[in-house]
Length: 471
Ligand SMILES: *[C@@H]1O[C@H](CO)[C@@H](O)[C@H](O)[C@H]1NC(C)=O
Ligand SMILES: *[C@@H]1O[C@H](CO)[C@@H](O)[C@H](O)[C@H]1NC(C)=O
Ligand SMILES: *[C@@H]1O[C@H](CO)[C@@H](O)[C@H](O)[C@H]1NC(C)=O
Ligand SMILES: *[C@@H]1O[C@H](CO)[C@@H](O)[C@H](O)[C@H]1NC(C)=O
Ligand SMILES: *[C@@H]1O[C@H](CO)[C@@H](O)[C@H](O)[C@H]1NC(C)=O
Ligand SMILES: *[C@@H]1O[C@H](CO)[C@@H](O)[C@H](O)[C@H]1NC(C)=O
Ligand SMILES: *[C@@H]1O[C@H](CO)[C@@H](O)[C@H](O)[C@H]1NC(C)=O
Image (tube, rainbow, N blue to C red):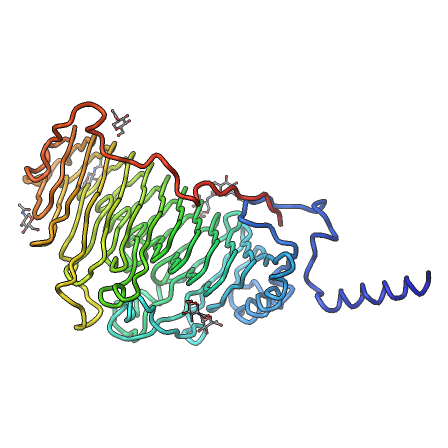
């Protein structure tokens, strides 16, 4: 017996020394459960950033603490996975990468502060589907604050903890055209699947906020994104060459598009050939006076297909759903469905631009024309609108299959005289006021048939049931 106790004691001691910080749920059960949250998967192991030397004073760099924590916890990927808790405090850090079967939990009262020291941000190569950096002419880009490539089963969540990008440094330097490489994003996952980003607040990103690229099965849910409406390129959520994505219950105030759906840029995006498809966006509230609620493009060269948008509120926003493309993009924007959009104070309700002529370099093919077709908008109201629609297709490449039904637009005190300005577009309308342009005549069909389509099925990610987990 004593021998067994001794051996057991040694094993316990070894275990304690080996993983001093990491609690295993199988030992403690759920008795100590604190914060409850919903996630794709719960984890067997849990650790706190302070176990790895983290200092939450807002001044000490925690880059090493995050790296050490994630490197250690990555060893548990095949043993039930691990979660890293960021407790209340201000945790300054540079860029770090995540691992698979992993949860980053940012507690209420915790703020991850993005470093303004460029040496804390490794420079990585440009995205293959873009060829070039998006800022200026240089190649390369700063790795995102929280990043990861080729991962599976990653959850970034909290009970409304914060990530603060401290963007002022980056916005100022960008405006002075002093960057040779592209500004960092806050969260970026590449070539990954089974991703959840939920219940956190993102403030003042240097550039885009959330960028899943080349990903599958992505949920972005209950996120608050705040940036001054005057600062450059602070897009909210940018699903880019992703399949099966759900974005719901988000509140976004931004200096650029609240959601920008993308799939690569001109010849690089055409060659890479990865579309964004099967995307559902619902219950979004957006304020973006200089940009769109949901933009499709401008980089769409891998194609954008099967996008469903519903129950959206737009306040003081430039346009609702904006298609941005140009000759040279190739690709397509097709099978787009939107319904139940409520708008107040809009420059345009509908805006399609076939002349968004920003190209990565001179190597683009001006004969690569985008296909824009089967665009369905229904059941919308807007108040205080300057111009109902500005629809510019491309010469010899009209945007076709446009359907708009049951839309009531009330105008501002000083509206544009020409309410529907349409060129190179084709389609039908039904029960739309003010009266649409002649290129979008009243549908001849009667009754229900005159309603534009909206799919009655779900995309697979909409049926995923989250598990109840705890910290
Ligand atoms: C993150 O991973 C990328 C490769 O995907 C690498 O280039 C970069 O250096 C890593 N960043 C850090 C902070 O380790
Ligand atoms: C991730 O996967 C892609 C596509 O399979 C591959 O091209 C890339 O090199 C991988 N990246 C890393 C960091 O492993
Ligand atoms: C996440 O947000 C949703 C919606 O606001 C809320 O119902 C839920 O309680 C939140 N979860 C946590 C852990 O705070
Ligand atoms: C989360 O925090 C942000 C910023 O403080 C706040 O605006 C938002 O209302 C909070 N969301 C929830 C669900 O508590
Ligand atoms: C209506 O829109 C104009 C801009 O066109 C704006 O200045 C004004 O404040 C808005 N009015 C209301 C009541 O929101
Ligand atoms: C028209 O759209 C409004 C929302 O703007 C909706 O409440 C109403 O049910 C729709 N009418 C029909 C006949 O679908
Ligand atoms: C209508 O749109 C065309 C093409 O964008 C533009 O050239 C023209 O100035 C617009 N007309 C009015 C009256 O806004």
